Length: 267
Image (cartoon, rainbow, N blue to C red; front, side, top):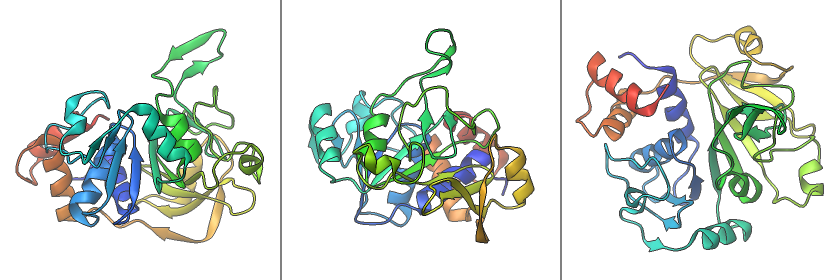
């Protein structure tokens, strides 16, 4: 069964979400990973969306592209306001935050606002939405992104969502909720953060990937864990459920189904 890089990332991300926990998820791949976890091994995982929806149950093939559309509310146990959701995050009720990133630096600071300078931006992106609140307030944050030198940079052009700021205890000194990013999940590796320096560290490799390959695709020096692990390939069950979730079609293993799912997830 052919597996795309994007599918690997989503499956691996879903594995980190435990049952009976609460995840504040961004739309796109983080939401897909959250719903996949809910369907496979964490049936009591509560998903929170920025639009104020608590505990939605997504309909396969009809995943929301925005937190403000009613598909995002399907099956919710509560519809509240956006400010209430952020208040719950600030009070420490959310175990996980799950985000994407256009740029990320050695300390897990995320840029999703501009490429270039604020005075002369080359590219304008979607901006923070609720991502800053997710990164600032959730107990543990996962970041899901492709592994490319243009994304993994020594210094982000704009700090949309704070990670460990300048490293060490900088996050705590800034008054942010303890925790911050714990894992960056990419198509090449799973990266954690050094316990003291808070610099990004290679913890596990995707199938067929070497440490040198990860370093070549990173725009800064990476730490390497003493016991670098290997990420297992998605199982047929995981991959079938993922594709069915995205397309709304029965699980298939042929190239047509894989192509449909890849187009809908986005490369």
